[in-house]
Image 1 (cartoon, rainbow, N blue to C red):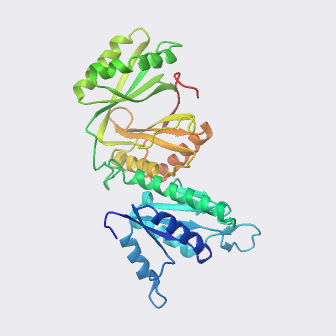
Image 2: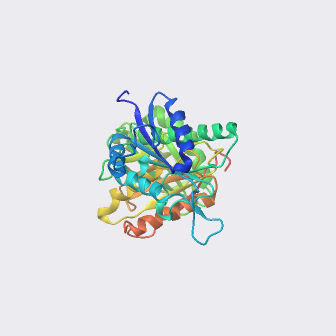
Length: 366
């Protein structure tokens, strides 16, 4: 086995053994993976202590896939079926050892996961399929979801230090710029920004990352990067001069280089039609931990999710950090926000209420 291959352990109940075996075979078909199912020969020898053998798997593997299937009926219930306790225990052990971003859970559509999983990576699959063609298609979906997840987590700029800073930075000077527009000029400001994008690059080497109208105060925003702080400052000065007739005020906030993350997968506007900008204000000692939570949540979301984080970073200014979330609908954006705020409030990270702004882009159809 090559030491460069990513090692994946697959856990399931005995009832779902065939799914674990088929998924392991599907992953092994890709050269970058070395997949082990719990049922593989030699993994859990009959006469050896289970806990010690499972701890060895925790040490050996990089990612853990757990299948939640409807194996046990709740006492007194007619239709509520749950996965076996040992499977839940193994999921918790993997989460505790390696963190949420390296745990991938596939949940049967009739088997609810534990309620405290929150926004971790949970993907629905159909474990009761009997048709060979349908099962093969389901395995292919699961393999692709795992590959997408691992690509995000192991990306060059997706490595988090324990204290909430990125291990690597692209070295760019990055800014989140808010603009207060004259009445009824919000759309025009963003259209003007779009028309100036080529000159921003030619004159200042400034690269737009996201821009749009926001429903609230301020009226519009631009997230951009430049090679140096000097390039960025000159570009911001040019915005003030060029748009002085439509922009009343500009608030420019620096994004810390080692505290910025962006999703490596390109945004598909057809899939994610709605976007939101969330601004967090945290207690002094909780800023990095909040950023770490957001990034780990982002990396933990499957490619099939109805919402995704595209950008997140720690700011200088009135707010401590931001994230931009894309969703299939406004309800999906609200669900992500509420789940995140509930967890951050439980952890006592936030200092005051969070600002959530719906984004619209006059240059595209929402």
